Image (tube, rainbow, N blue to C red; front, side, top):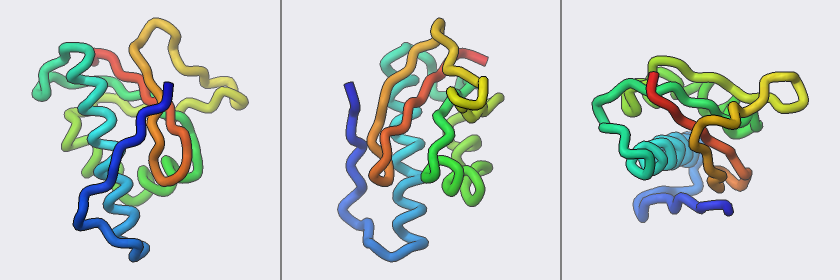
Length: 109
């Protein structure tokens, strides 16, 4: 099942604003998973995220902001074809971000 994280009404199609909007969508998806797993917002987590084009772009520009907002202790870009699979024992879900399906998994750090 893929969940679409909707952009906020103030988002525009402007490049920088669009990237910032997508970064916030990623944060919202992570926080949604955190809530579903009963992990407190202040508790540090490990994040596993598929290595898609949009994820690479977002992490290149916004990794510090994303990690700070989500209290991330460890961030792993999962590359199934490259031998870094999504750990099966963690909670994960698919989200539509920037027109791509992004699988995000989280666990307590």
